[in-house]
Amino acid sequence: MSKKQFKTESKKLLDLMINSIYTNKEIFLRELISNASDALDKRHYLSLTDNNYSSDQPLTINISVDKENRTLTISDNGIGMDKTELENNLGTIAHSGSLDFKEQLEKKNEVDIIGQFGVGFYSAFMVAKKIVVTTKKVGNQAYQWESTGEDGYSINECTKETVGTDICLYLRDDTDEVKYSDYLDKYQIETLVKKYSDYVRYPITMMVEKSVPVEGKEDEYKTVEELKTLNTMIPLWRRDKKDITKEEYDAFYKSQFNDWNEPQEVIHYSVEGNISYKALLYIPSKAPYNYYSKDYQPGLQLYSKGVFIMNNAKDLLPDYYYFVKGLIDTDDVSLNISREILQQNNQLQALNKSISKKIKSTLVNMLIKEREKYEEFFKNFGYSLKYGVYQDYGMHKDELQDLLLFYSSKEEKYVTLKEYKERMPEGQNEIYYASGKSIEQIKKLPQIEQILSKGYEVLYFVDDIDEFVVMMMNEYDGKAFKSAQKAGSEVDSEEEKENKEQLTKDNKTLLESMSEALKDRVKEVRISSRLKSHPVCLVAEDNGISMEMEKYLSQLPTDQKAKATKILEINPNHEIFKVLQKVYENHKEDIADYADILYQQALLIEGFPIEDPVEYSNKICRLMEEVNK
Ligand code: ADP
Image (tube, rainbow, N blue to C red; front, side, top):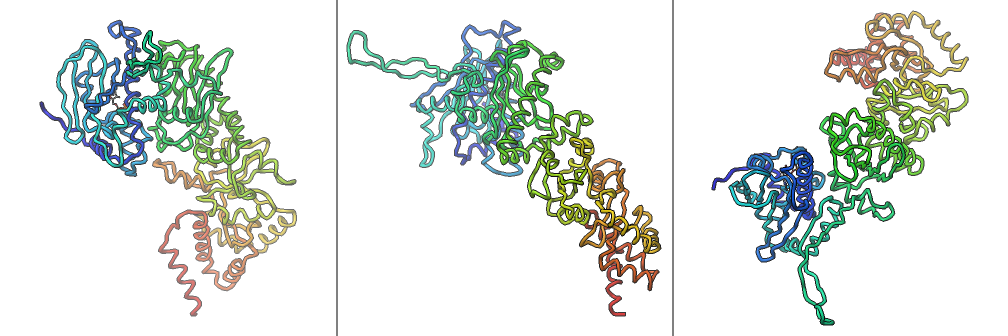
């Protein structure tokens, strides 16, 4: 009997399971039942087209207990495994759930995350010191896989009459901390099945003892054994809403969608009409760690008449709602439908539309009635909604724009565009925004001083995508968006305007010589009316890309390094301006250096790197040395 070693990556996961201090060890049963149920699904599916797979017995999961030998066996008459499958499925982590888990583990090394993943089969090693899997496929030799975890596994031929799989767990010895023999207690098992696997579509049976009156003799009872089905099998979503507890909704969510956390929102409803369906949808309370990566598998489960058809049916959701998990059950989609047909199915489009509508109304409701909860939601998935506005050339902006939140200078919290617009004072015609790395940084931006001083509200954009979103929207409810960091966002009174023109005239040659000194870098140096406490700032030309976009594009691994056309603005009321006037009068030759220093400082404030740090610091030093002259 030759022993094989587990693949290294599997070994790591195994070690973790064997040495697990995870308190929720009981989930192993849920995992094994779920595997069995999948195996039954596979067999059922094949039997639709191939009689060889039909079973004369109903498809069932059975649990049996042997107290003497301390074993717990989970059996199914599902698809079974052949030798290669045994090797591949139980000797390696080849499946997505476990692989993700392993990667996460390497990053965090936390036992806490076990429950987040469908770690499946290996979780049985949390409670078992040895596992024996006996399995047979249709028309195949039966095999036995055996392992104690640590020293690899072996696979041998064996005899098994019926098709399917038996997973036999040899439970660990009880310790002071953990009473593994609890898993031999039938009452406990029944409780666990109810808790985690009640909705499983196949009967989960177990022999139980029952007291029955002895016939003909009053008051005398005998104990008989009977096969009991432990689960109700009624799919949760087909039950009446008012009979379902939050715990049941949550437990179902956790086991079906591999999330450790409770969902933030449950959406359970049914629709009758042109297209009829029942839906049980969930909004997660935390974004999955891979949500914003291509590893994330979006989509809903699709059932027809209570029978599972497919996982991850992407077409049921628009991508901006991909964070929604759940399932729909409809009588209007045929059972034997293939993936390709599914894609072109009109019914699906109708379903998608109807589901989107429901998600939207749920979100709007949350926004109105449970603001804090909505803000929490938006923290997780707001990016997804923003991306939805941007993609497809803004096609979905009407659907999504009222779901967006942005940080407001006035409220110092997240607000909707509608709220912003309603608060706009007389005379304000545009929606102002400013972009930066963080709210703290934006608050200090010189460019927003004037707008704020007029009592106008500024939206602070901290997400890369924000500017792209408003660029795509162009306007909200008749009000255009305006960047505070662009040239045309000064909000001057007539007086301020005239004053500025006069100052520009008076300092014409000074401004020209500064413009000349910076001619490759800025389009113009000009007098500003927007600055209050700051000496200078940069703004981008109105019609070009913004400075935030320049920064964003410069990080992309493409050649598309477009730059914003910049204008350097000077505050004529600042001491520094008087210094400039003086330098220009007395040391014209130095004005280029002064212009350069101020330009570099404006770059810094904007969050750009200094072009030539050595040169810059030399110039500052030269200036400081002036004191000694
Ligand atoms: P996952 O279920 O996430 O794929 P598991 O480690 O739980 O990972 O199981 C690995 C694989 O072993 C399954 O994908 C399946 O192919 C196979 N398997 C597990 N249990 C059974 C079973 N009872 N019957 C048939 N195949 C099974």
